[in-house]
Length: 362
Image 1 (cartoon, rainbow, N blue to C red):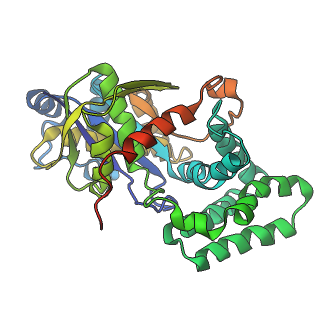
Image 2 (tube, rainbow, N blue to C red):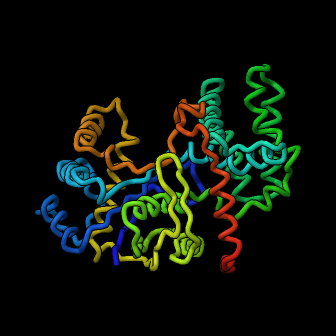
Image 3 (cartoon, rainbow, N blue to C red):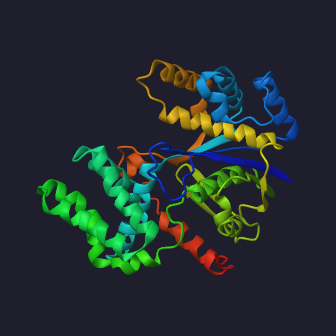
């Protein structure tokens, strides 16, 4: 049975605005025990450590050379490893579109998942909130929505509504149009909608794991075993992953931009591994850390800029399998989603989940 491994960095649960960890990355590979051992031996020979961890290796730049060499070796065969990466503040914006604006559009008879309109809206709002206000205002607005969806209390709901309405009352008409996207759902959907939103909707670990699973399934039909680092918090949503990835899911195929969603994903076993014993997980940790550093390094710092350039030259961008990242693309053509309707896959998956076991009680 084929096996792929996953580890992550930058996980902060449903807090997507943690200033010290703005990037979330999940790395994966399908190396055998011997392949992983030889790869670590060839790139980190001489490093005395029972378990290789990116944060320790990258400290003070002591082992940047070895990290770059590992990335170079992985990029030489990008079908064996990869990274799903998310800009967490932007990810929060996409989730607000999904859970606050899309339900309103649906009530009004609009399909926000057609032609990538949900992605275009997220990009437009992310850029406009900074362009017409500031990056700090955008974070403040998003923080109110994050608190509202995490607590679901009437108090946080009213705080968020008051913040939006107060700002709306003191701005000019051009900016009022932008905030209207955030304000209308307070009137139409109300607090009851927030109370009924599924648990952990702001947790982006599961969507990333699903994307990685689809990539492996596209490369080989399996059956697969997934080994995830045991320190991960994905265990909280494992029941959903087990249903979604199971080998007895009905056959279906959806051509998503950037990834093919092929069912069944044919994952017959998911277990949590010990990275001290399974070197594939150490490779995942180093790759995820390197990708996170590449995305967030201070480009004005000579040391950071040099390290970033070396990671780029080694081919780290070749290893990106997808993710959530802001852009200025807003049209179906520029988004690569002309004629695509994401709602077809969403409705099919929702029906598959409904007919299976419900989540365990916490």
